[in-house]
Every structure is written in C-alpha cells, then in structure tokens.
Amino acid sequence: MVIGLGAQRVLENQMSIGMLLAFIAYKDQFLERVSNLVDKGVDLIMLRLHAERLADIALTCPEPHEQILESSEARPPVAIEVRNLRFRYGESEPWVLDGVCFRVEPGETVAIVGASGCGKTTLLKILASLLQPIQGEILVNGEPLAHLGIARWRSMIGVVMQDDQLFAGSIADNISFFADHPDPRRIEQCARHAAMHEDILAMPMGYNTLIGDMGTVLSGGQKQRVLIARGLYRQPSLLLLDEATSNLDVVNEKAVSAAIRATRVTRIIVAHRPETIRSAERVICLDPLDTPARATLSESRAI
Image (cartoon, rainbow, N blue to C red; front, top):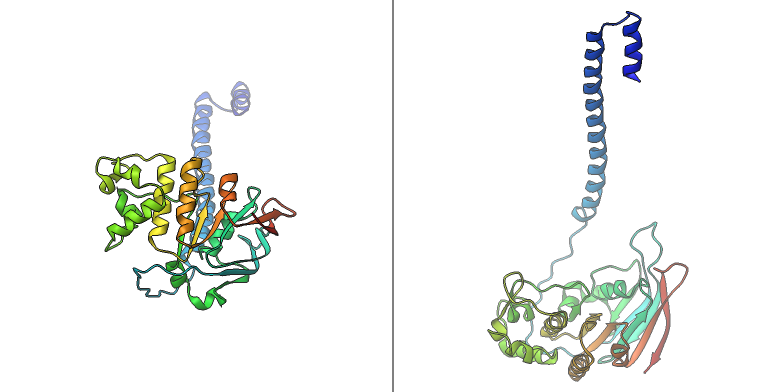
C-alpha cells in the first residue's frame, strides 16, 4: 500500500523517486524499532510473572530448624490418624482432598487406591509433611503432628515416591543416603529386605559399584528396589510407598512385601496393581466427587 500510494505521488509529480525510496527505508527502520519495543514490553510482563512465582518460594517463611540425633536402633511402628483433612493448591483451585478421615494401627499395612488424579500422591505428601493441609489434623500415636515437630516426624518415616531419583555414587552411598557414618551391616540388611542383595553381589564391585552418569545403569526394577532399601535404612516407624513396586515382577514384589512385613513397620501404600493391593491388610479408596481432582474417603475394607 505504501509503495502504491508513493508511486501515485511520483506519477503526479508530488514526490520524487529518491524521496519515495528514503521514505520506505525510514518506514522499515521505524517498524523494526516499534516491534522491538513491543517485544521488550512483553518480556517485562513475563518477567513480572516469573518474579511472582519466585516470590512464592523466596518469601515463604523457612521451617524451624530442629536438631535431631540419629538413632541406630529400630523405632517401634506408630499409629497414624487423619481427621477431616482438606487440601487444595490455590485459593481458586478445586479441593484435591475434602474431608478425608482414617486411622492406621501400628504395624498395619494399608493400601490407598482410587482413580488417577483423585489425590493419592497428594495425601502421601501431606503425611510426609511435604505439603501442609488447609484444614484438618494428623495425629501420631494420639499426638498432633504440629506438637511432635516436622523435623522429628521426618526422622521417623521412610518415603519412596514415584519420581524419586538415585544420585551419582556407589550403591551403598545411595542406600545410606550418603550418611556421614554409614553402617555396612544395615546397608546389606536393607538390600536383603528389598530383594536386591543378590543383584548387587553380581555386579563388578558389589556394594561399591558406581551408578549414575558415569557408572552402571540399573533397570527400572533394580532402581526401585534400591530406593526401597534407602527408605528402610532409616529404620522408620512409618513407611510411605507411592507406586514403589510398579516395575517389579510378581516374585520380587512378593519377596519385598514379605520382608518388609516381617519388620512390623507401619506401611501406607499407593498402588494400582492387584498384587500390591492384595499384600495390604486394608484398602482405603479415594472417590472423586465433582471434579476428577477432588476426593474424599469412601470406604475401607479388609482383605
């Protein structure tokens, strides 16, 4: 359009060809500068959004630091009770958990089942104090978790989540979670409970075999068993497992379940596989309500 109007002006002797070419050149420079200015404005808007997200982390009050001494003795299993638990990720978000109530006795194995997205993993993260409930409370042996203290509670539990990772180092380091003074006998015992001892002995350097970027690559099932051994190394009172045996074959899964059951640790398992569910003494089902992400406790039945 600019060239057409300029050509008409040239034909009418109102503008020279040189003036037209100069105008087109200045027009291109002007549009380029305006476009760059608009892009910078968009970048500033996005920068504000990123700053708001970072502020959620940077401005969050740090957790109180509590000095907890590690114990070499096995802790007794605990009873845990959840009362009227409600949780959502934001004020405008739907409730993920709404009015969840249940009790797990000491040494009991409970499986939590339900449709995908109904809040099973979120519930486990709340039990592990990785998330704080909006309403409701959690009791440990009848004592509110807030009185017990987050640091002390975390020292009493072992957690194996879906997205847990192994770190570059030896297998023994990963099982002991790089403890300052690892106990080789306890490392081997935990590997036996996780049905991983024979696999480790078959590796070139046994428990000193390096894994990670520069070491041996473990299969999915071997990785899960090392993670289970790491959870057991803490000698927890409560073991939280989120699909922790999904990559194991039936034989290894039964061996792991039987070995962990012999330790009499309280277990709460999130599972979909029938074999894992059958290994539990009770099943707690989370049913979705209005939306796929909102759930309440619907039933608890013995197997």
